[in-house]
Length: 416
Ligand code: EPZ
Image 1 (cartoon, protein in one colour):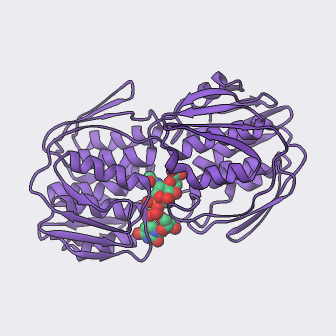
Image 2 (tube, rainbow, N blue to C red):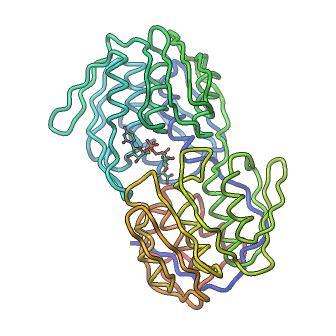
Image 3 (tube, protein in one colour):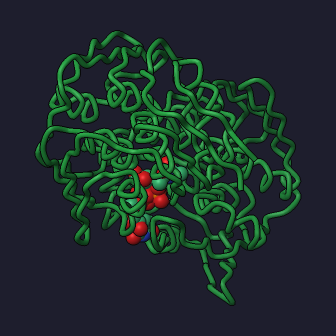
């Protein structure tokens, strides 16, 4: 298992261009397979989750060519069966179900496994698909789906699920009639998916609000589209600068996507200068505790930013309290941070982070994508050397993480 070896104490300073958003490019890749001609996606991040999705597309007979941030996707799919091994590689590949059914009216995929964050149910996806006329049989861990009678429908989501909202948009884009999604997720990635679908000739409106309306069309043509910037990756680099007392500018971001995150950094004593497409952060005084951080669906504080921000606040002069309201196992990284000297008490969905004066380098293991990034952030500020293993999890969502940090002053090397 590869690992990062990090020597703490260096400030993270300079300028970094933000990568394309993992959680936007994945549904947009799925949407591209629904088109009747090829698509070109720009600003596509070079991350493991994209590679895993392309492996599934190639298994389905779809051509995909990725070169220097540009991804070209063909439109021929010779199969609609996704085997267990590929489905288990990445839970979010459930997003392909809506795309396969929308264009081919049938699909056979294995039930996506859970992930490091706990069970990842898809009941909202399945209930919505059935309302839209899809016959779904759950047999021996597989979902056998028949969408010959696919039609638009009024769908109310019990929870504003990002994945379910995206899957319904894909399925509805080529369904007969109108689909209305109520209590839809409002994340920026949903708006990016709407932008791509409409660039391909779909008729989608309302993304970014809790009601999305999709009028199905018979065909979708290919398009060229630039993926939005990754707001969680931007937050991660800002946390790395904040914890080390550096001065960092993240460029190529959409500042409005980071409102709740900027407010936390400001409350903790950082100074942030917001530009049109950039955010600059610096910190003079001590890190201040921020009171309560509650994760919420967008535009609330994103659950994906919890771990990086928790690592940063582990050196605050006082205690901060986190309430995780989205996932069951969002605190698995806390025990690893404690190996570095952090003082964190976890009780169910609540974590109390009591700031300590210093962190010390240690051997730690990434527990999940964002938890792994949090360990790197802590190691950058810790005294001495740290080893972070399980870095394949970090590479799922962070492009060139070690070389980017090195360019900003970090002493970090990948070792086999
Ligand atoms: C997306 O996951 C993101 N992943 C996650 O980012 C992100 O944390 C999450 O949205 C919330 O913002 C991608 O976009 C690929 P949900 P998703 O459906 O779609 C429950 C990262 O680190 N639920 O909004 O799976 C579910 O169990 C990843 O980049 C059901 O109960 O999130 C969870 O508790 C991690 N039934 C909650 O809803 C369902 O049918 C939120 O899930 C679907 C979801």
